[in-house]
Image (cartoon, rainbow, N blue to C red; front, side, top):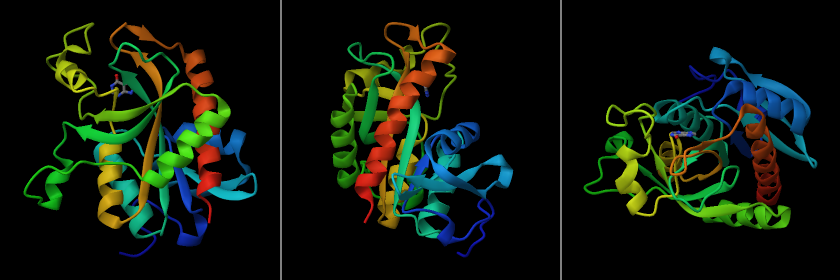
Amino acid sequence: MNYPTPHIQATPADFGQTVLMPGDPLRSKYIAEHFLQDAVLVNNVRGVQGYTGLYKGVRVSVMASGMGMPSMGIYSHELFEVFGVRNILRIGSAGAIQPEINLKDLVIAMGASMDSNYQAQFHLMGTFAPICSYEMLQAATKSADELGAAYHVGNLLSSDFFYDDDAGVPDALAPKKNWQKMGVLAIEMESAALYLNAARLHRNALCICSVSDQLVRHEYLSAEERQTGFAQMMQVALETAVKLEK
Ligand code: HPA
């Protein structure tokens, strides 16, 4: 496969070794404008803005994944396979399903379980366990320790369902109870596809989420509070990118 791709109008040289991926294209623009120096727009197909700039002298890119595994599947595949990106660091939000996790805490996904059929394409005669890059996990936990961030490391659930027919209102946790019993920390919608693509293409991936919803205690961040949690996650992500540079 060659560049440009159907979804990314850029060249491999346009991207740094590490791409930070929020879900939201406008968040990608915000990060480029507030956290990177000399950021240049490198992609804008479908409004999925990708930027490359400098953080502490290291070239770092940021581009949105969109929501859900099909969208993350497309962008991570193209970045790894066509644009030669080495590391993708998803920076998202998640709903915590364990009671001890607080709003704004970070959840770092050692593994990503799923209720999706995404891995069927790999024709495995069994069930693959999507896991993060150990190198990226080490760099991220070291950065989180240095910054004094409250974080939890463990399993995420990447779900295809934000609105679940069984959920009823207001108990969004009900259909996910069995995942909670298995010790899964939080729910989001993209990481498993990212980890599967990284495994298949022999690249590195990690997801860090900021907890925006506490589904056990029915606590939810206000729009303003979402920004605070987000700033700390950004610091951890950018320091991680610096540690990964070689
Ligand atoms: N479910 C799925 N994705 C999410 C949630 C949630 O409750 N909160 C933030 N991202």
